[in-house]
Image 1: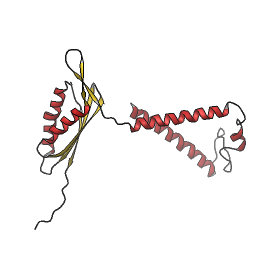
Image 2: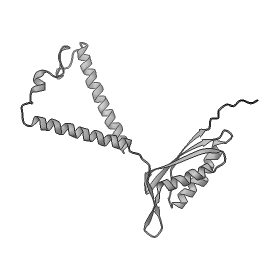
Image 3: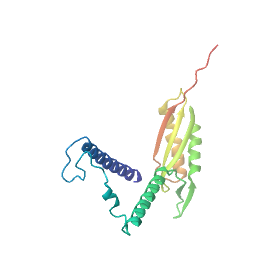
Image 4: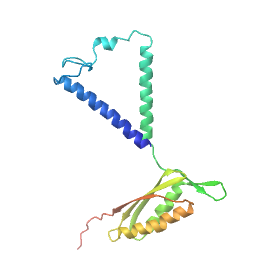
Length: 192
């Protein structure tokens, strides 16, 4: 949801800035602006002295300006923390079957997935990360494969053993997993 809001907000701000800047540039280059456009001459300034100082002496002006700027700073900080926040799952809710639940540390499940994936033949390195919600986790697994390994075999081993074991041990109905495969690169060595 946050990703959609982020894209819509960035797109809206971008379109407004491009349209406004393009309109000012077009008037500055000599294009004939529409009748409602506030600047109608290429030598017209964006804010005249009268526009800049119109409400300066009114008592409401400065508190309003400060409140709006403070609100914009708070919104920008919220947006920044929401975008930069790590989306790693800290705990998984395990159904114990008696109506209560138990919490399993997300890092423990990630460690088990990583260990089982690394134990597969031909996997040089593995890394697992849990995302999503604690009652509906999702896994992201990265595998670095040695050159002699068939990627299909490594993927089959990961899905039938490591992911199935993690899903069964945590009592999850499903564990959607995104797997990224990479081949290991070896440095050339001199043969004598």
